[in-house]
Every structure is written in C-alpha cells, then in structure tokens.
Image (tube, rainbow over all chains, first blue to last red; front, side, top):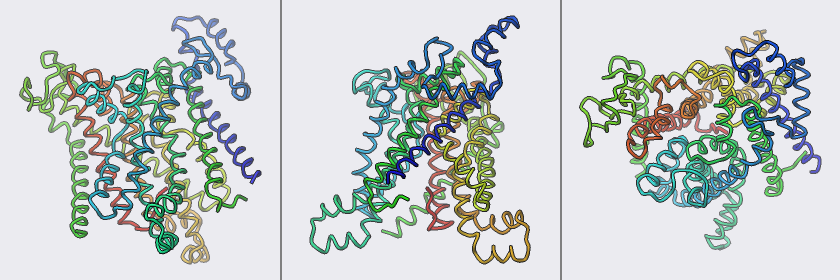
Length: 305
Length: 281
C-alpha cells in the first residue's frame, strides 16, 4: 500500500513536470517577450541588454533548465506589470479563489446529493422527470450565462445581492451558485444512476428482506456505495471548477487568481500568466492525488499492486 | 404513462433536431435574411427594446445594443461563428483523437507515450489551456478552431484506444492479419468502421463543449475579435447594460442555451440509439 501511495505521488510529480514543460513552450511560442516589453523605438542595444537581464540570450535548453530549477524553488519570476514576485501576487489572490471554489462545491453537493437520491427513489414519477429536466438545463448553461441571469434577476431586479466584489456571504452567494450549477447537475445525474444500480442489487434486497428500516437501507447501504463514483468525478471536476472560476471571477469582479490571470493576459504579463496557470493546474493534480488516496480508505475492496 | 413518456422523449428529440437545423440554416443563409447590417451603428437607435416592449423602434425585432446595432441581425451572424467553430473544431479534434486512439490501441509503445501526454493535458482545465494558447498566439476564428481542435483530442483517443484493444484479438482482425493485410489497411478499413458509433457519440457532445468554449473565450474578450458579431461578444458587451437594456445579453444567452441543450438531448439520443451499453467516462 505504501508503494502505491509513493508511486501515485511520483506520477503526480511527473504530471506537474509535464504541465510546467507545456507552459514553458507555449510561452515561448510568442517569440521574443522583450519585443512587447520595450517601446518600438528602443535601440538594438537596449533590446540586447533586456534580453540578457532576463536570460533570454541563453540557449533554449539552458533557459528551460533554469526555469525548472526556479519552479522547484517556487520561484515563478517577477511580474512585468507589478514588478513583484509572481508567487506573492498569486498567494494574495489564492484565498479568494479557494473560498469561491469551496462555496461552489458545497452548494452543488448540498443540492445534488438529496436530489440524486430522491430522483432514484421516485423512479418513473413526475419528481424524477423534474429533477432530470433541471439536470439537463443545468448542464447546458455556460457559467457566464448563469452568472448574467443571476445578476439580472437577483441583483438588478430584486436587489437581494450585490452585482460583484468581495465581502460577506451576500457577495459570495451568486458567484458560488453560478460556478457550482454545472457540477450540481453532473453529480445529481451520476448519483441517480449509481443509486439506481445499487438499489437494484442483491445486498439491498437482503437488507430489505431482513426488515431494516427503508431509511437505513437507503442511507447506509445504498448511498455509501453509490457515493464512490461521485468522489472520483468530483475530483476530476475540480479542474472544470477552477477553469470556470476564471470566467466567474471576471463576471462578478471577484478578486481571485482567475481575475488576476485574465488581467495578466490582457497586459501580456507572461510570467504572471505562466505562474497562475501552473498553480491552477497544480491544485488540480494535487486534489486528484488526494482523491485517489481517499479512495483507498473509502473503498477497501480495491487492491493496490 | 410509460408510453406517453416515450412519446414525449421522441418528440423532444425531434424538436431538438429542428432547433439545431434552424440555427444551422440561419448560419448558412445569414446574409439573405438579416434586416440590417450586423455592424451598422446608428446612435439614433441606441438601446431600443424588442418590438413588443414600450419604446421599441419598428424594424428592430429584438431591439438594439449600445451602438444602435440590430440584435437580431447580430444573433443570426453570431450563429455562423458558433456553428463554424463548433463543427470544425470537432472535426479536427475527432480526426486527431481517433488517429492517436487507433495507434495507441494497436501499438503498445505509442500507447505508453500518448496516455502519459493525455494525463498531462487533462491536468489543464480545457478553458485554461485554450486561454494560455490564445493569450500567446492571439484570438480570431481560425486560431480558436485550431486551439479547440488540438486540445480536444483526449476523449476520442481514450475511447478509441479501449475499443481497439477490445477488438484487436477478435476473429475478423486475426483473419485479416493472417491473409496478410497491411497494418494501415487493417486499422483503417477493418477496425475503424467497427468503432464509429462511440466516436459519433463523443463528437456530438464535443460540439456543445466547443461552442461553450468559444463563447466563453469571446466573452472574456479573447475569442473572435470584437468587430465580429458572436454570441459570447454580445453577452460581454451587454453585461454593462444589464440594468437598462437586458435584451443585449439575454437573447444571445438564450441562443447559446438552446443550441447546447438541443445538442445534449440529441447526444443522449444518439448514445441510446448507437449502443445501449455504451458508457462514456
């Protein structure tokens, strides 16, 4: 088991290394970043001096090596616009993004788990039809459209919530719902189908036959087994959640890493773009590592070789 | 009751197909039906509401935006962007993914490398990878199609790979090998035709994803240029006017939702029709 954990960990490191490599080469696609940073009338000498100060006159392989070495030391370079270390800029914004992603996750699970159970238990009724229609709708609405609808209804017309910014829970509510809706639909759908599968299985019939309360059968026997695929999918969907946070933060002026990233792209602040993308991808890899390890605890049937 | 539900589902699928066909048709014949030039600005007709509301101006069915441009005409032209990007990106990613999947399923060495690359790519949320590339190479429709096409190969490759692995030992493959069919011919003429069903199913859903990705990038100002009418651009421009002119962003939003909903319903139907046992990850 220890060797599994170790192997899984090493693989996560490998993926992170791959991510860093991809980002490095995408960033170099642009050609010479110095050309964008200097005014067009800069002399050849100035260009050369700046290239030298960024180490861009070194061979590509050497640049890549230095870049990796810096990454291991969590040195993401310095932002071109703010002249501050990228790592510090991102660290300042990270709590807001985590708060938003956490709230969305919580919101989606609080709704999706009961909805999935109910849909499975009331099979063939209008309740199931209603839940499934809602699921289909939720899966078909891009996050920016949900966000705009929520602002239109709850901020502009009803004036219940602010249109954007960060503050108390009232600021958090709309962006969390907008970002979490898609995951909620997905989890509801998945939980319903895995509950249906579980409810039709032999051990449930046994549990019922021996006279357990229906509630116990559903909550303790069926639900626990049905939650396993949900855990995996939630782990994988954290990536979509982080990606969606870029859009959500832009709509709701939420000062997180996503908003920082978009502004960095507008400003062509490449070190900051690199850092933010590596960080978001890194969080995703880490979450999935944790999910895999949790799986081992939750499902003792799995043999790790 | 059950029969009624079956019929409703059937009707819904046909309705979705009709909605989709309508948008494709709009995209094709856009120049013939729009009442105004989608980019014609007119400050005298700024922010006019749709015709059924008070203060509307005749001839502007869905109202006008902050520059006096006709929303209806812009939506019709916007469907061109969405449909073109959605369909072409999926053709590209489907071709790449299928090829990689075929090779991975057949050659173990290719498999070892490609599946590692797939894992690395999946570590990037789709929109983030697209953002990173677009940030560097710039937006525009061609770049969007390329970016979404190149980054969308993983689901195809994974499914095709496992399908190939499951049929490579079946009798017809072994028979073809025995009579000396070349490997290229074996892969493309014998194996590929037998695994088309899951590819079509994935492709259907991926069109929806590509349309969402395009409109998200355009919404962020990193997709098609602002002078090209697209649904994402319109939503983003309308966000500033939500309090006064909701129609600027609501109508294109409804269009995105309708198209994606129709594709998802059709995708479900295609999946059920092709193979009731197919389960997509």
